[in-house]
Image (cartoon, rainbow, N blue to C red; front, top):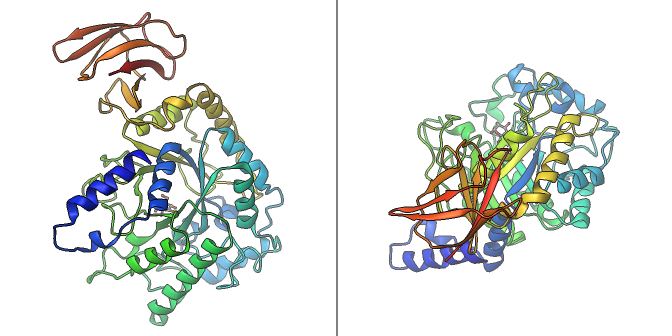
Length: 438
Ligand code: GLC
């Protein structure tokens, strides 16, 4: 409740006397605000990119990158039989990692739907010999095991002729003259209605593909406000996020950063880093290099790297959404499973310094990051080889100790903060010092 509820109240108060702009017309419901806080408190989620592309084992852009026609590509559906898919095992492994939510691709740019949609036969139940609604199974397991489920949904479609072709998917053999936006928009909204009606509580809809029309000569009208309204009407607690790489639009409840921490621009998606809003923030990135399963990509981040990423993300007050590309046989790759297990061990011992925290008093530094929970300030020392560390704090420190060993830490007041003296030179993945403050 705390942070996002208060900031929304503050915002509506501030906005009231101004002229009504589109931003002001979206007022999140209380359920939505609570869901934002719940989302933010979870801090760590797992992204799953899974679909027909997994079979080609070259990432989720295979159809476009290899210039394959939709007609040829779609034949692969008749061979999709993920025999070892077991929703219970996926959810259990992900939950054990300390993650609080799963975001799965319901329909990626290749247009294939991973559920029993009535809007197109190009789906897992009708077009494949598997005939199982994998999203239904996943949603039931998520409810059973008590983890939030989010749905990724592609705004663009490389196969459907009614989708007005953008800057991608031009090699996929569509007859562009058949574009029919109204028809496509209705199709999307009907699909979203199914997803928000038949699959239990959905924590968020995660849109992607807006950028497909970002270089159109005249701005493309995606009719987002009406679509967002539909989502909020069907499930008021469902958060809306859009991976458009810009500051949020009206109706969006979270702000997404792709392969970048909030405020950074290393991925170079737009010419400048998107302005960081007051909405809950989420950074998504890959555990290896690719989103969809890529057989040659064994470049997995080490446990150390994953923990540091999570700590730095939490230090920015943001969630980390870490991607895994399940295999075509329905299993999560062995290395990913092993990382989930190791993350779980780290989270079991240190999760409270991440989950339910806010960005700490000191912005992310070269030596590490800080997170705060009430009067507890966690100093995460990631890279520092000295036992004295200066912290520019304005609050009063009443108690200080090493989080793991409880060994006392000496605190010396200086003119602009404090110097903490540690019982040893920090070592390990994340050397955490807890400061209790007033
Ligand atoms: C990009 C890619 C897409 C992936 C997404 C995840 O937008 O186009 O394949 O799903 O990033 O963030």
